Amino acid sequence: MVQKGTTKKHNRKRRKLRQLRPEKLLILAFALSCVFYCFSKIGLNSYNITLSVEEQKLASQVAEKQDEVHSLKTDISALQDKNKMLGLAGDDLNENQDNVYVINN
Image (cartoon, rainbow, N blue to C red; front, side):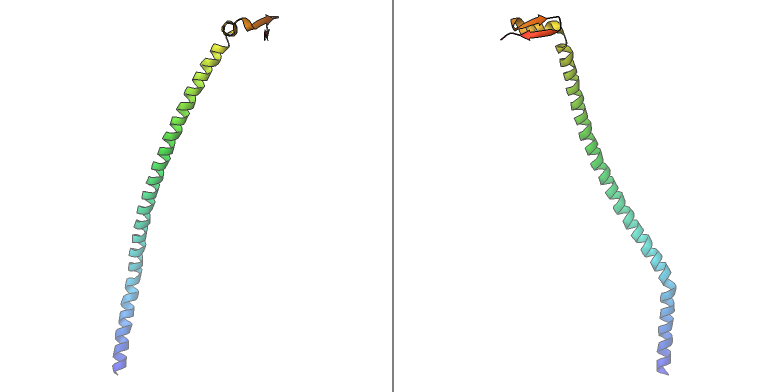
């Protein structure tokens, strides 16, 4: 008879555990989702910071290239002037048929 009383108590404990188990699972799932949310938020923020730094580097490179292109365009427009080129070459350059220039050695 002693054994029957202990098994009843044991069964009661199992019933209580079964009744509380879904609540514990929900709490565990909520806690895990909060942890996942925090880690993903931190990860995305750090990734955004990395991307903004990369964007600033690329923007500065683009600005440098645009300045270089602008200076090259001004050089090209300066070099396109025929009279200026003839002046730079001096007496070593002779005109032939208005378009062909012969360099004297």
